[in-house]
Image (cartoon, rainbow, N blue to C red; front, side, top):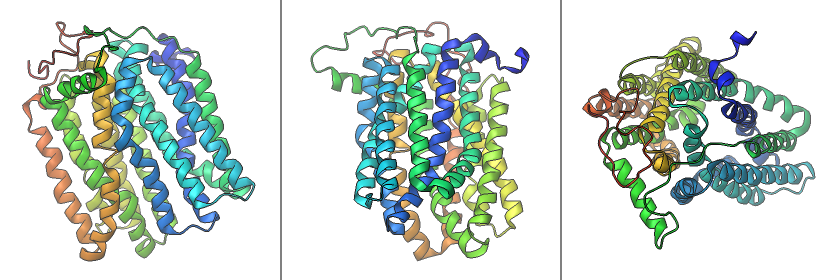
Length: 428
């Protein structure tokens, strides 16, 4: 039985604690994706109100992601994550109480989602930066693949659980369960004892340190060609490709695929493919993984043209499964590359720029997708999205620093805590 347990879980007890707590929390997150829209509709909200609530959760990333990155590099990362989980526990718990007692209004839910999104903005950079403090460098890819596996599986399991809970106890009941998952995650985070972060040459508490630390984080980004070009490609994926999934896909499903049932088949296909991609990433051993990642992103960027292809739902679901494999491969490799090659003391700041340029900008794409489809038509808009996204991913593959980035950090820079020098480590 022991051999069935992944090695990283057997050998890294601190990661195991994080993994268990976060696995439950991720399932809760996927449940909330279903519960929150129904919560808005249950209190008399409109489709526009559903969009407003989604934006309320994403916009704080634009405002606080960089602050979260600086704080995560300055303070204990797992404590920031713990505080974020406690805030999100309180937010979802309060939303559940308001819904279950029948006093919730759209404005209440919007305000709570703003607080939730703010806590998210602090959690994500800290989570990326925490991994090298829990897992040895040779196990980072395995750990990230396992986390990705749970996220992908939750794409399939979470909505099913949410649907059952909404039917039995209403949206408030589903959000109450989501709140409990944050409490469980917080309990596991409270028990973590990660190793100490590498110290910066200049004390973090020196005068004017926030702007200096923010500038040092940006130096880490712009001085590494593979980092800033990768962030640019990821931004295109979030702003151009994902709106085809979140906005135009459901519209086309409603018109031509029989509604939600057809769309559920397609999204399940993507989720299954994502699981396969995470399993492949767990076993992956290549000399230059970012070259594979860039090629995978090009495949994943074909989702818009697949959705608009006019093929049967079954064929689209199979093709979406292929893109799911590719997308999972890309993000596991990307996160592992950052954790491997970015100095530990600056990792959360670098990841905060990543989240700012991707998740933070996604509302722009979501807002533009609808008006563009109204003007051009749904299918022409989907084709245009592909003509933008695929070349952007292929351009990433053309960058020498991306193609040549080694799987392991050079010995001269491995484990360095300095954030005041940022050599281009991606070209041997």
